Image (cartoon, rainbow, N blue to C red; front, side, top):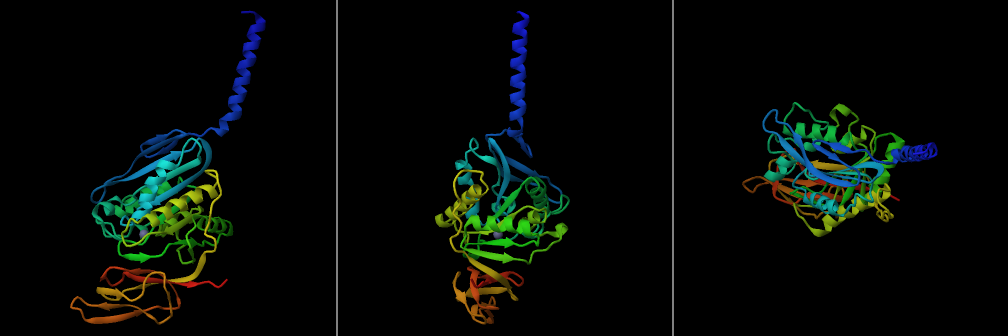
Length: 355
Ligand SMILES: [Zn+2]
């Protein structure tokens, strides 16, 4: 080899090294979640362990779709309430259709956040501790099952995410119309991003929610936990009464696809709700009695303040109370099966904001 050739080879090596240096920032690092190490441009599914402490442990099924291009981490969480099936079924569909080769960023799906509840088919509460998972965030690694699940979701999902959707629907006993909560934190920039996300998901009713606690140590709700960490998060509700109807599943799929487009993680334009109804005040009315609830009004109806929404009877069939709407508005959800318990919700009314 002549000296000339050596110099040429050296030059080529330098050029290749320089190109690598230039392209390096564009390549994605592996995304590590629990036991999974996901290379960019690939999909990995697995289970996040929730170790046993007080009582048994459990696992949280997940999928990571790690895009070939760098971008935001979007967390999609279904099954915090595991009798709420359309969001769960929507994520299984989306898992098959989001292409990691063209995706910008990373989609982190939690398929069923609350496995004990899913397996035992419980509404509201987990069967191990009878706590509502969406009231115990940010959780406790040393606590009961629901608290430990919440802690794993906070540490492994919320902290890894840039944006989060907590996907719910009417629980097994709730007749509910589709809406999203826009949780207002007081941080104008964050609130604008969250509002944009809520609009992009595209549900026809949007609740302006200023009621969530600002205490990060007792954030209670998954969405609120993300917001208190400065991350836009929306709680969506589409589906009802334990059903797996196509319309509700499709609405969840469409909502996620819209958000992916809005965040420019996939090409295309989001199609937000054309003219959503804003709810500027809402109230959940709780039962004062154990017994049976018979609604008189269906979900989605406009009700007048003072109107009887339903009647409670005791277990012997005797009248206990006519429960009335606290103000005029839309019946966002109403209990659609007979059991009612003191302290549990009967219905939610939302006041419609004037244009
Ligand atoms: Zn729920």
